[in-house]
Image (cartoon, rainbow, N blue to C red; front, side, top):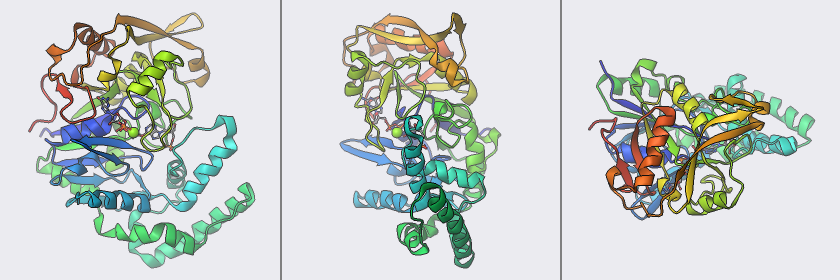
Length: 432
Ligand code: GDP
Ligand code: IMO
Ligand code: MG
């Protein structure tokens, strides 16, 4: 049996507009799911005049009738998630069908503290994390010292495990950082009270999701971060601590690979990166500044100015292969209007050699110069353009060049933050 499922995955270093694209596609979906990451994500969805910034919640949450799932592969910060829910409630949105995995890991106050202290101690070698405690929470998960949402269902056992873990953490804070540790009371106040309020939403989400799939539900998997921030396939160590790639869906949700039928890559018409690490096509000039201002490229979660560069076809090809993109959504396309020329990196040149594929080593990446394909720009504002044929000729030529560089067809072109500022090119992958 074929499944009617679609993954929406970031192809770059995050902030590609996954929230906008997921929200656009969610109209036709019944279930919208997050499989990794946590409050490091910031997904912006604009509905008419209202702007929503989502961190944990899937972007389907703005439709009242969608089932929304937070999978086991996520790390959750209870008070932040609760605030997110309350803020939505304050704006009249009360999710009726929200489910949280009983196996997702908790971000504890000491994780956030550790994120901060580790970043400080790294000095110039810092990762530039979002300081949300995400790395330390995943570290504890893999070190088998994490606490999970469902653990709170057994208060007695939870208290014993927390006491043990706090002893370990407090030794670390005192011995390594010379900092005060955490008391049970503080953890209770800063985290557990909120975590208990989330208990009614807990369930075995793998079971729920697979049952939905069995009955033929249309499901959207919403990635956070992006392929180049993936712990295995990104620019390690300047990455996040999870698997945003499509492969992360299976482990992050407990669904079989055969149930992920199609994957749509989301990519900006150029590239941005927030945080430190290699960025071969980075523009440190007036064109970069111009794109930053036009695209309002400041972080959703941290407010940091994003680094800007031309579209990197080498990184995109890497992402297309790893995720198996069947289609592409090009976002922030409107931002490129008004430039004399536009460029796409089709390869790198490194010490006289031509590289077609994204290299693993940071040392090599530093020596890579992009080989650009340059095309004429276009003047016209495209923010109200509804059809591909109505885009300026040069804009169409640019989109064609993107398709050719990675050999994946474009399904959507986003020309503004709103739902109606989306051009569908041909058949959409999640049928109604
Ligand atoms: P995400 O993390 O991948 O969901 O992306 P973010 O929400 O962090 O960043 C994308 C930003 O671009 C948000 O402010 C969106 O509202 C905005 N946006 C999305 N699509 C478009 C578009 O086509 N044009 C413009 N101008 N802005 C867009
Ligand atoms: P969305 O889902 C862009 C970056 C951080 C840093 C690195 C590690 O909105 O696309 P972390 O806090 O995860 O340990 O930080 O990853 N980063 C993101 N950059 N968009 C995101 O999420 C990001 N989440 C993490 O800036 O470089
Ligand atoms: Mg974002």
